[in-house]
Structure formats: structure tokens, C-alpha cells
Length: 306
Length: 260
Ligand SMILES: Cc1cc2nc3c(=O)[nH]c(=O)nc-3n(C[C@H](O)[C@H](O)[C@H](O)COP(=O)(O)OP(=O)(O)OC[C@H]3O[C@@H](n4cnc5c(N)ncnc54)[C@H](O)[C@@H]3O)c2cc1C
Ligand SMILES: Cc1cc2nc3c(=O)[nH]c(=O)nc-3n(C[C@H](O)[C@H](O)[C@H](O)COP(=O)(O)O)c2cc1C
Ligand code: FES
Image (cartoon, rainbow over all chains, first blue to last red; front, side, top):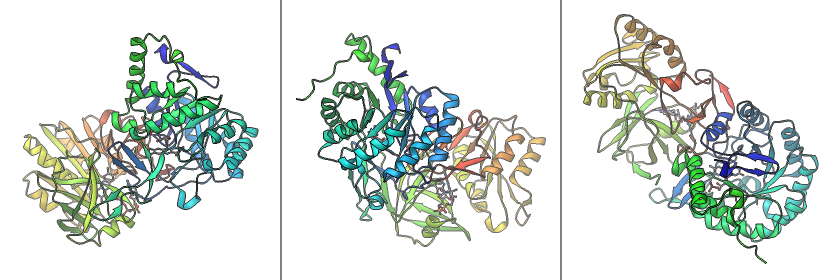
């Protein structure tokens, strides 16, 4: 397992695999269950200042190639959410990313003040949820000015490294990534869900999701994630948590080659069970053995785009 | 693929004032203890245990509680409903002397279990409990199975007087069972646990479910982190004994904890 040990913003991690926001991250015990199954870093559900129940069901639907989901940012609120993280930290020294969501700079500042007092290791700004459009409009990650303002404000007061989570649903992701870096982001997490998309029940002639639309995750988004990560990696000098459709060791290796330092694994929990993290760890090691790489840090990256 | 089926309601059977059984013509291929997620695409998708299951049809038996179930009670035969599943763990089929302890709307799932146990040659004793006669379910259906059944109500208005746990306590003083199954309100199962501490057992739990496929984490149980929609809803004694939240709290749709 030494082969897959690495470092991320000064923290030692046992595996480059990250549990992304919104997957199994509702409780201290859910996070711990993923650690027992081989994850290297965990992320909380995106926390908001006030508790949210999320959208009515159905909130998730499968199609060939992936899922659409619109959970609606359900979370117990920042205070209870951080209590779960602190409880997790009593059982584990695995690094925790605290994901937070707000719609304006003031609220992000308030959330950061809470996170500063928690045992979270990193703060991740969810600037990119596609599933609360009716309520909040276009994701913040679509606006360079907003991204700059929020990242700068949070970076100024945060006592822990700041990660910006980017949306794939923009035409200028590299510019937005550069703006986030210039504003002080220590790392990027990308990509959030794609689309959003829609599925229809043919007999009742209704959208399957009660929110009508939902973001795509799973294998179908991997090629999009790889392209966007490579484009952003070519421009920025901060580490990237490459996320989107990673289901096996080969996918994880591709993510690294595209420019990722760590790799998110979310929807794959459905396809391969909670053991998916251990399986991917082993598959990465197998690839490295076969290709004679001594460490995950020795894996080559794609040439940067000019 | 996580298949979804949209079918007309084939039959509605009124069990009590607030409990109906809904039947669909579909080969679900489920095992006893498993559940489906049911929706009408009007807002809300909810988990229900399978109470009857054959190669041609299956049923769910549902208590009217809130928005979704109230809307369901206004539907008629022929109205379309959509479901996915069956999901989750199932009861271990023990082939010897078994005791089934049930309470309220969670009893009907024992009908599916009892039929399967009979096919496997088990010797069954069923305690079918409810608060009062008007809430008692499935007594007629269980009678057709010719198994030893003890009907009981808290107020004595039907069958014996007392809770399911009282009856189980009394039975276990006089007899031995190789395996105990429980399905009912969580506080019933909590009260039952010390009574059956020398026995092997399985309990059927309920927690708030959203995805039902093990991704969202809403249904995890502390401190194990197991997902009730995948590793549950049926949990064995070894797991139940480790649950710190059993009989204490559960999580709301937001993930916030609420005490029982
Ligand atoms: C594995 C499992 C099996 C179940 N089997 C049955 C059954 O066979 N028959 C039956 O009548 N009921 C069953 N339930 C409970 C049933 O899901 C709820 O009664 C139903 O969802 C209530 O919905 P509502 O909108 O009418 O009420 P609401 O007003 O929304 O809720 C009333 C209460 O029902 C529970 N509930 C609501 N939504 C959910 C949800 N998505 N997941 C879990 N619990 C919820 C909560 O405790 C809530 O406080 C089962 C639950 C689970 C988890
Ligand atoms: C059920 C579900 C809930 C999610 N919730 C969040 C969330 O709260 N915040 C967030 O930043 N991303 C959320 N995401 C996006 C994931 O973190 C991830 O970026 C995306 O699913 C792509 O990775 P995957 O294909 O490995 O799942 C969610 C995804 C899913 C499937
Ligand atoms: S309901 Fe989503 S993990 Fe169980």
C-alpha cells in the first residue's frame, strides 16, 4: 500500500482516493465506513448555514452510463454537520474536506468562521451545484467575478487550505480556474455533476426526478472530466482533485495522467459496492507493478496544452 | 441497471381504516424483508416492505401517515404508480423452530416471510400485535397459512391483551426457539431485545431513505456507518448489538438527528 501513499497540501494521505461531497457524507459513521473500505480523504455533504431537507423524491435515476440526481443540498446545517465531522475525527485521523454551499459572499464568510472552529482539514467551496437552479439561479462558478470575490474573501479568513469546486457546465473553465487560483485557492476540485439532464417516464409522461432535472454523474462523464482537468492542469499551478465517473483503477490512472493529484470516487459506490475504494487501490497498484512505477507520484502526466 | 416499472394498481384491499394493500401484476423476484421505492411523480418516493410476492404479482401494505400515503389512499384500481427495487437485505431462512414477533403495519411483511419459511419446512409461531382491534392487520391472511398464531392487542379488544413483547416474554419462559424475527415499531424491538438476548435473531429497521441504492448516505446507522438500504433493512443480532442509535435517534431528510 506504500505505493499509493501521497501528499496533498501538506497532509499525508494513505490513498489518493477522495470521497466527494454528497456521497455517503451525511454522518460521521458514513464517512468512517468509507475509511474502513480504503478511502484516503473524505468530504462532508455540502453544508449550508440553515438545515435543508432537500428535494422531494425521486431524487436520483439511473440510465445506461450513469445517473442523474437532484438531492437539493439536503444537510443538517453547518453546526450539526461540523459536529458530525468532529465526531468522525475522534475515531480517525483521515483528512476531512468540509464542503460548504452558499449563494453570496457574506454567507460563505460566516460558514468559514464556523469551519475555522472545527476539526476539518480543508474547506471546499461548492460554487457549482446544478440542482438548485429554481431556488438560486445560475451556479456561482459560471461568473469569474463571483468566484474571485468569494475565494478571496474566504481565503482571507480561513485557517485551513481552501479548495474551489468547479462546474463543468461553463464554456471557459480554464479562465475560471485561473481566477480562483489568483484569488488564493489552494486547490481545485473538478468536476461537479454535468448538465443538468432529464429523464422521462413514458407511461405517466412525467419527468422522473421531482426537480425535473438533475446533474449527471458516473461513467458517462469521465471523458468530459478528463478533458476539462487536462485543460485546467495546463493553466494552473495548484493541485486538482480529479472527479467524475471514476469506477476502476484504469479510470483513476487516467485522472492522474490528465493532471489530478487526488481522485474523487462517488457514484462508483453503486456500481461496485462500498468495497470500491479498496478495489481501485489494488487495481492502481497492479497497474504500477506491471508498468514498473514505484510510487503513485511517479506516474507521468499528459503534456500540458500550449 | 436499476430498473423502474410503471404499472396500474391491479387491486386495492382495505385492511383497516388506515391500512391498505396495493397489488401490482409484476414478477418482482424479491426475497422476504426487501422493499420497493414507490412514487406517483407528484412529489415523494417512499420505501415499503413487500407483503406478498409470487411470480405473477406482489403487494405492499401501507399505513396512511403523511402527504404521500394520504395521496396514495385516494388512488383507484387502474391508476398508474411507478416503483423500483426490490432493494436491501432479506431475512435468513431458518429451517427449524422460529418465532416471529410483529407490530402494526410492519407485520404484513411477515406474511411473505412465513410463506417462504413454510416452503422450507420451518415450524412457525407468529405473534401478531397491534394497539387495538381496528388497527390489527392480516389476521385472516395468516389464518389461511395454518401456522400457530397468537393475535394480541394492547387493550385486549382483539386476541390476547398485552404487547407483542409481553407475549414473547411469556412464550420464551416455557419454550425454546432456534431463531427470532422482529418487525415493528423501533421501541417494540428495543423492548424485545433483552427478552431474546439468549436467542439468535434478526430485526427489520426503518430509516429515512432517498436514493435506496447506497450512495446518498441518508440511511447510515451509527456507529457502523452501514446503509440501511443496502446492508439493511434486515440486520442480524451481531449488527443490532453494536448500533448506538438503536431506540435512541434516527435522521431526518436533512440528516439532522431526532430522538425517538
Ligand atoms: C425499509 C422500510 C420499509 C417500510 N415498510 C413500510 C410498509 O410496509 N408499510 C408502511 O406503511 N410503511 C412502511 N415504511 C414507512 C413508510 O416509508 C412511511 O410511512 C412513508 O414514507 C410515509 O410517507 P408520507 O409522505 O405519507 O409521510 P411523511 O409525513 O412524509 O412521513 C411520516 C413519517 O414516515 C417516515 N418516512 C417518511 N418518508 C420516508 C422515507 N423516504 N423513508 C423512510 N421513512 C420515511 C418518517 O419517519 C416520517 O416521520 C417503511 C419504511 C422503510 C424505511
Ligand atoms: C447523490 C449525489 C450527491 C451529490 N452532492 C453533492 C454536494 O452536496 N456537493 C457537491 O459539491 N457535489 C455533490 N455531488 C457531486 C459529486 O461530489 C461529484 O462531483 C460528481 O458526482 C462526479 O463524480 P462521480 O461520477 O464519481 O460521482 C453529488 C453527487 C451525487 C451523485
Ligand atoms: S437511502 Fe441513500 S444510502 Fe440509503
